[in-house]
Length: 239
Image (cartoon, rainbow, N blue to C red):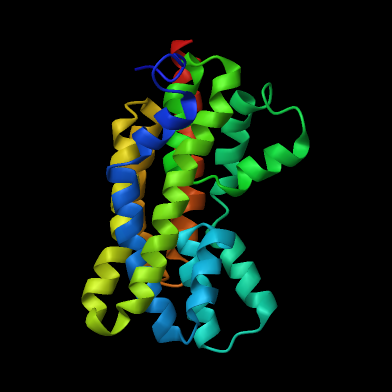
């Protein structure tokens, strides 16, 4: 049933249905790993859960607890978390045109941006253009609501189960998220998305060998910029 058809299922319910499955399961499993790491770093249960709801970005959260465990100053923790989650900026900029018409008040746009992550972004970019504008915000809210709920529950479960999970299992659960992200982008079937996945696969290990501390940021900056320029050149050639 299309989310634009409210006879049997409204857009909120459709968003919840679409998120219930692999998106929610992968988020839950990944955040179980994060919850376990947060407990090892010395965070309380409520601080760990709050960091998921407020930071809402696993790379930034991992940077936070690693620096916290080292006793880093707050400004360094904030800077590192912000840099790790900088990918949300282009996501918000690309998806907001789909929401702006139905969200004329800025406070609601800021609220929508707070819950932006790859799963809701990919779902709205895929479904949103075929919806009437009024259905897009409730669909996004339903989808993001399930994702956030799964992440909060996963964080709490991981914190409670920390003693029962080995570090290898914890790290494996955490890395489910980027693997799933790769599959989401690969499924996009757009040229830019496919080029981005391939460039990341090649550049990631090389930059990690060059600099383990800066490898991820260098991969994003260099490979991402290169893919953008290549895709733009290809569009110009065939346009």
